[in-house]
Image 1: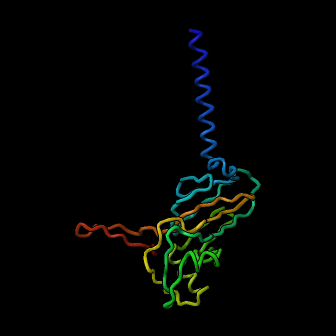
Image 2 (image 1 turned 120 degrees about the horizontal axis):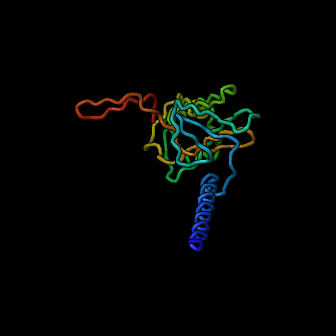
Amino acid sequence: MKKIGRPLIGLIAFVLIVAIAVALYVGTNGFQSGLKSFALMRDGSYVYNDTTAYKVYAGDVFAVKHYDKDKDDISVKIVPVKTKEDFRFYVDGLEYSWNSNIVPYYTDFTSYFGISVDQGANTVAIKNATLSALKEFARAKLGSSGEVSLVSGLPKEDMFRVEITSDDSTMVLSGWIYSKPDKLELADETLIINMKGDL
């Protein structure tokens, strides 16, 4: 019985060590980045580290949960990123390429998303979805009335990096900023989704 007990204890210890190593690997994004000094909470779900293909919705409010009582102010930056498949759009009859005409020259889209940061409540709110932000950008930077027409649909891949910084640590959420469905209706066996804003 004693001979069986020692190998079993060794096996349990080995399994525990492997489980801790896997948890650390996942928690640090494959040891690519260190643990953050804060977490983000949205609708009761936590984000502890950088993530890709993350769906952010217009109207989302993120609570910044600091691990330390001494905390720095929160800042937010939204950066456009190149997409695998370029998409094109028209502004006042002129055609633009996201990858060629926008991303290399305009590195900060923060103001177009209507970001608001409440330092007292430690929250970050995002007002606009992607198409609304693109229209705001066209008004501000392309001298347009804000009328944007797409050659094809917006790509369903990471278009932006949302960078939330506090305590000398930055959390990066790469993804897409969608509109939330406002109301679901069933009419004549057809599902109708009314959107608050845009796609």
